[in-house]
Amino acid sequence: MGWRDLKFPEGSLFLVTGGAGFIGSNLCEAILGMGYRVCCLDDLSTGKRANVDLFADDPNYEFVLGDVKDFETCMEVCEGVDYVLHEAAWGSVPRSIEMPLFYCANNIQGTLNMLEAARRNHVKRFVYASSSSVYGDEPNLPKVEGREGNLLSPYAVTKRADEEWAKQYTMHYGLPTYGLRYFNVFGRRQDPEGAYAAVIPRFIRQLMQGERPTINGDGRQSRDFTYVENVIEANLKACLAPEEAAGQAFNVAYGGREYLIDVYHGLTEALGVDAEPIFGPPRAGDIRHSNADISKARELLGYNPEWDFRRGIAAAIEWYRENL
Image (cartoon, rainbow, N blue to C red):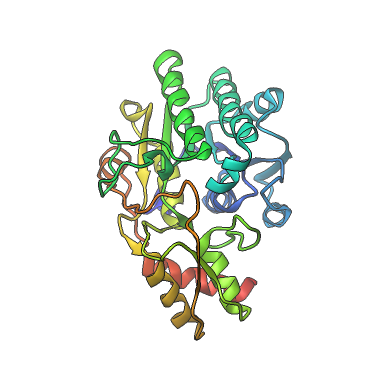
């Protein structure tokens, strides 16, 4: 079953934190398209006003300009909410190495504020974004939940801490929490700008503008690139998952493995561009290889991703051609 066929109680209210961001705005769009109500909380520090304006005329959509680091704001926006989809966080491994205190405050304390506000407001389900970075230097592929290594960045520490706090809230307070370990999500509305932009939109933008992109490292690192439609499915199915599955974290990916240099050449071919990449030094804290075992999410969440890399990258390229 795809996510469009899922059913929630009539009048259900979803709170999407970080709803002006890439993944968050896609979640807002999906839920509104299904006919349910959405409250979007975002401080617009990394999210975009344009992703709020998309839905401004929808009577089922409310935008709250606010920060998850402020507990009173979290309490206010959780009032009357059925499902929390907690996406608000600062990403980027290298930036977290530069700003560890901020990442702790934003990604850990912000998540804890949301967990407590959700508990006090009797939210039905709390679904939150974790990351494949929690696997650290664990060398085995595919990555399997319960087999993690040493964490390689402050960002990874924040996501692992979020998982542990969520587990505590399920264990002690009965709040059903579901962690989603995203693997290199890409797709429409992902920001191609800035030093910390994700690799696929950055490559697409640079190639479309006639620039030569830089690959950090030798290009032989591999990733389980995951199209955003699969992430929407995982979030919505987690909202309907059995309580026996609560307090756990799940890999959210397609289960494939793409080498960065192959992705690069595939993009040049699709865009009709002849440009050799520049190879730069590897990024500190990066995982060399990433590939997910998604059997746990299939079994406990009913997750069945429909979008493989080839289909997803074609859709992403089409979107950037129309919107850049």
